[in-house]
Length: 484
Image 1 (spheres, rainbow, N blue to C red):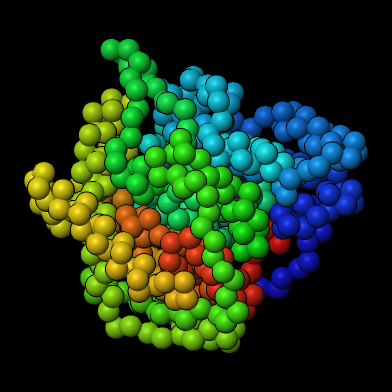
Image 2 (image 1 turned 180 degrees about the vertical axis):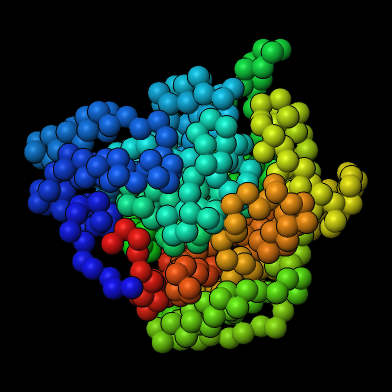
């Protein structure tokens, strides 16, 4: 497929747009109008964004242009549109999580990550779709409907940040905010052929005001279990590695209201030599699709060409154990949420969760004991230490994003046997969050009309090292872009 040069503003990268706005070569109003026009063309097909308020976005764009004209200091994302996920508090919008029962409760305050985006000058434009409760690798809910993948509408755009990734791939927005506890940034980015970064836990504030749901018995506080506070992160998605880097810098907000927040970013000296990259193809429980292995081969070749030392391991048991721990700790924490899911969710999310619990039971039994759960948390700490010692500040892991290509739509609810296959295939997505390490997915090859991405995992707070390696892959992969 030939790659043509962009001719419309919506086709430009966020870096290009930000530079042009600051130089007054284009106005923010022109940028926002171009993106809104693209939304009008594509969103009726892909259903990536909900609750669009064009006049509100244009008013913010006019204010951004006025600030520049007045000579005021502006942030790095000044005048650039960004989508905000429907499970993230944005003042004046419902934090619906795809649930009709939450659709009327408007947030009074922004989540910390949204505040950071506004302070950097970004213009929130559209709420990106997600599955109900953000608990699937598919994007569909009773409130907003199903999101389609611009690369292949028969395949999932991923979840739970599927609307964010699809909006990027279709050219609706140049930047997107998402969150990740089981692949919810990285997997959608991979499915849609864009870039998604899961940062180190604590780097970007996960603080948000308390959430409530109305039930027949009255308002119910939606408190979150330990894995959410220890493993979930907010993070950036964009079309290029450079745009993800810019968005990460803007979102990095030390915030002690976040239980896992760090008071300041640790100093990481810039390395002169490229990191060593260790290829981990699998964990012995599932066979990779041939296109997945080809993508790993090509990514390894790209990294070697860029000067990285690339090694290959036959086995890496630590990641297998981490994935197993995810299926224990996250699943048992979700057990306490089941009454709320049953009360507020539809048949689809309840079926998906039933299949999830059945897959976890194959590993840990129907009802793991409290002692098993406690031992799991203890083992987690040991694995964190061991992985950090192995990676340090000069080594990365290269893994698949998933053992399969993007799944067929509804694969997790149509067949319980197929749902278990997905559960196993997603080990690269589940191994990382339980340990809190950073990871990025980036397209590495183009196979039978689909981009195939790989994942890079780095030591804690080594996002720059990760992004440098990801950029080396991106620059050499030559994967065609839908938005061009």
